[in-house]
Image 1: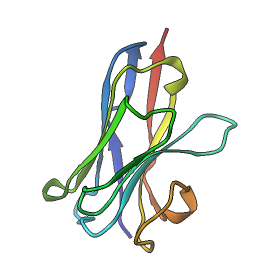
Image 2: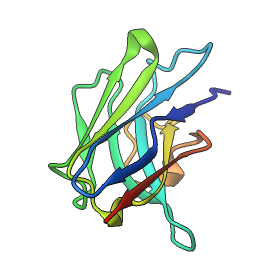
Image 3: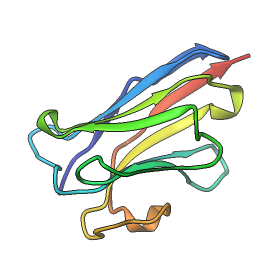
Length: 125
């Protein structure tokens, strides 16, 4: 089972930026599509962004399009989520996920079957 570890969360002022990282220590995930999701307390997990194995195709939720950028460095076994123009509605826990068994996952969490523990992003007004 691939283990994913997120980092890079923290507290930032509205309008600021953060870059989240997702690493797979000791394992390679170059064969897997990767995604970022987020989940606020009491709410369902929400799709944020996804990237194909090669990195040649990405997909974003409408709420983050133009502000967030997903990328990957397969040589470093790391996926990134660059976030700019953050607002208070972006405050939540962000999770990295790998689609181990689905070749072309849609923007839904049930097609991803390996998850990290999450990293908290807090945007202050």
